[in-house]
Image (cartoon, rainbow, N blue to C red; front, top):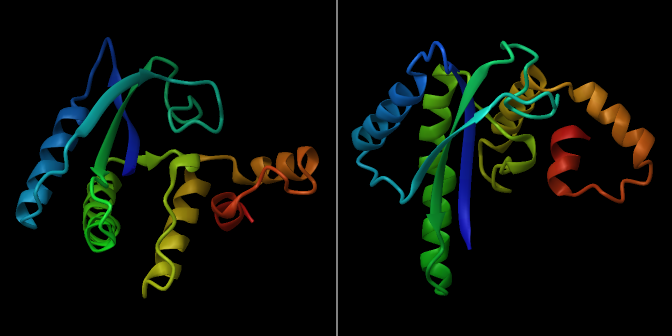
Length: 170
C-alpha cells in the first residue's frame, strides 16, 4: 500500500528540449531540503510523447504534437500495519510532501492526471480551498464540461462514478 502524487508537464521536444525536467527535479529536491523533509523513496521520473486524448495531461490541445512530457511522482509506502505509523506517514504525505510537489509544479504548469488526484482529507481546515484549486486546475487543462456531458449521456445513473469523480466533476 502506498500514497502517490504524480504530476505531468511539457519539457520541450526531442529536437528542442527545454530542460524543465531537470530543473523541476532540482527545485523539488531543494524545496524538500529547505523544509528539512527527507526525500521519499522513490521519486519517480519518466517521459512520454503527447497524447491525442483530451483527458490526458499530455494532450496536444495547448502544445505541439511533438512535445515530450515529463512525469514526476512522489511515492510513500505504508510499510507498517501499526495504525499510528500509517497515520503519521499519511499525514506527512497529505500535509507536507504533496504541498511541496504542488508548489514546485505550479511554477511549471504541472498537472495531476484527473483520475489520480487525491482529495484533500475530510475535516482538514483548508479542504475547501484545496478543492477549489484542484477544480480550477482541472478546468484549465481538461474539457470538464464536455466530460460531464459525456458522463450524463453514457452513465445517466452514475454507476461508474465514485467519490473522486463526484467531488471533482459533480
